Each structure stands twice: as structure tokens, then as C-alpha cells.
Image 1 (tube, rainbow, N blue to C red):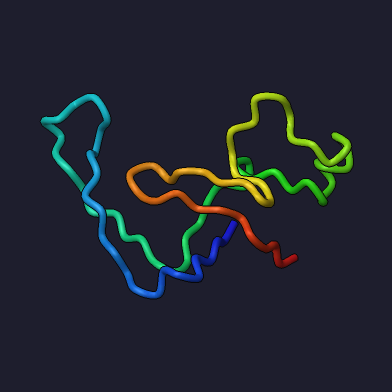
Image 2: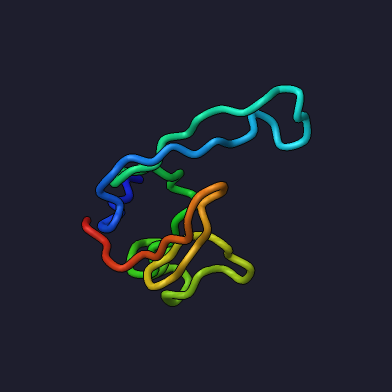
Length: 86
């Protein structure tokens, strides 16, 4: 899914480890800008088909992005879902 970060007008680079447990592998640069992409499975649309099947509630223990919710992107910022464009 394409996410648009309204306040992220400039491109930033984050230095992140290539492997979380093997420091010898070094770091890599990950760009972060106005447009980023996440996996579809990391989003729960309460008003979409999966929401209708669950009475507009995410499954118990769901820790991913949903309308009105916030998540922290690994090595980056906390983002929130304010609007969905279908």
C-alpha cells in the first residue's frame, strides 16, 4: 500500500543495520520521504471487507496500522492513518 506522509516533504536517509543481530554486516541507508510503501497485511481497513467480517473491529492483538491508529515504523517515525483514499 502506498502511504503519503503529508509533513514529509523532504527526503531523509536513515542508517539501519543490515542484520539486527550481526553487527559485522554493517549498516545500510534507507530513504524516507513523502511516499512510502507497506505490506497490505500490515493494514486493517475497518470499513473494508475485512472490517465488515469482524464488525468493524480489528482482530484481538492486532498491532498494525488501522484508521485512526498509530504505529512506529522500524528505525523511523511514528505515523498515523488520518485518511483512506480508495
